[in-house]
Amino acid sequence: MTCFAYGEPHIKLSRRFSPGKRNDMIRVAMIGVGAISGIYLKNITETFREIELVGVCDLIPERAQGGVDFVKAQQEKGIPCREPKIYGDMYQAFQDPEVDVVLNLTRPYEHFEVTKQALLHGKHVFSEKPLAVDMAEGDALVALAQEKGLRLGGAPDTFMGAGIQTCRKLIDDGAIGEVVGANCAMICHGHETWHPDPEFYYKRGGGPMMDMGPYYVTALVQLLGEAQGVMGMTKKSFPQRIITSQPHYGEVVDVDVDTYLAGNILFSSGAVAQIFTTFDVYYASNAQARFEVYGTKGTLVVPDPNTFGGPILLLRPEDQAAAPAVDPGLLRKEQPNFYQGYKEIPLMFDYCENSRALGLADMCKSIETGRDFRANYQQQHHVLEILTSFTLSCQKGAYIPLKTHYQRTAPMKNNPMHGILD
Image (cartoon, rainbow, N blue to C red; front, side, top):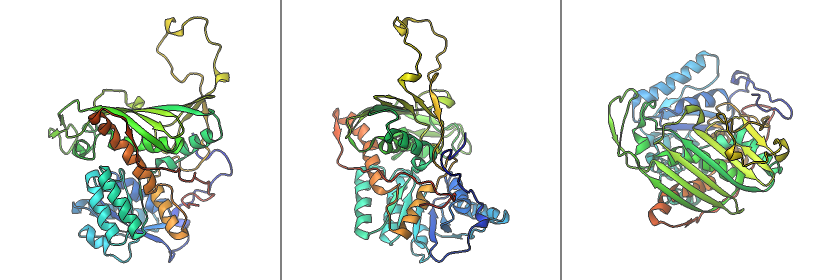
């Protein structure tokens, strides 16, 4: 699979060939140096040349030191990046005059307090998903960012990658006609078999919808636009989980959140999407992600929204063989190949590799230029309301109209230099 297949080829330069240190470089402090931090550290030091990591902080000092050691190893490779400071606590980072942006990589239930305190100290914030664990927290953060005149945004930024951006262009260009609806699913049996610290997935702010749902719902609003309302049915199948990964092998986790969630989303366009997420089902690892968008002129298979690339598949009526003269359900079939006859569509944009920190770099560019940025709080806030409304709908036995509004952020632009945003 080739990234950025259409248009002029981009220039993918090593950071070592980038210009020297600039006075207007946006400087970032990382709060939380857990499992997700590795790819951020890699991409901040190697790929995105308009931001600089100045410090790291973690409640576990060894993790913070590990982040510094990673950057030192990058320097030994010849990558010109600065060795970050280690802050004793997050307030040292917030009080550091060098810091422009706080990168919040803490656990979901910690997002609110870290982001709130950073905003109160006058720092822009980009956080991992979700924005907060409920709408009361989300509302408070949005109000505070508006009051302070600060930028607030966050993950997922996978929608900015080549896969979802190509799908958006295909839909906007009419490749499948008017969108009728969509169907997406994330099906697995939880993270306790592989994640080094899986307990938080079953605590407040966790669960499959809050963990994986942001990728799917963010992609949905990018492709279909504003949502109007939600209906859902949710449950908790297992009251406890046994961790089988190291270093917590054998520990028992009490499950506090729903782990089987199915729902419908009504969009302002009239399209209806179904979404299903679960940590309760045994399922083939290569089939855990499904995402299809249906239109009046065809069907588009969207790549896993937890990734930045493809493949993208398109089926239009002219691609199908003549329909049989009998009910196809009565025909004897072998194991079905669901996507037989679909055509793979080349990627039309850059960033098909794991490009986490792309949204952060885009937000930092907006601080310099004054333009809007793509992974902004308006999107995060709207997505959070959708995510939290499924369980609310189930509890109330009712359709939940949404109070937030949403306008799609700008599509990506292809820049000849990889790592430099428009």
